[in-house]
Image (cartoon, rainbow, N blue to C red):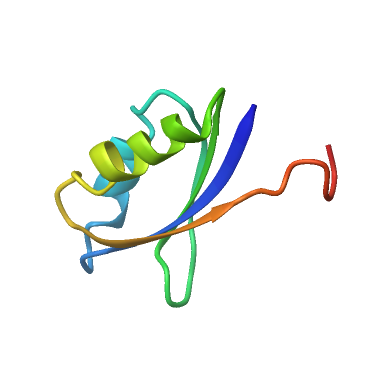
Length: 81
């Protein structure tokens, strides 16, 4: 399985709307609001890295009011399991 964390910046006052849309995406396991440079923290857990790429480029970035994303792919075997 592949895991990635995606940091999402949304337009001001649209955070909840964006979070609700992200929650509808298959492979998204967690969505949380954050303070700071990014507005939303997303955990994606899918079988292949290409599915992570598809979720980010075709689904998350396509959501209305998403301004930008930063993806942090996990190095499997390092850290907690």
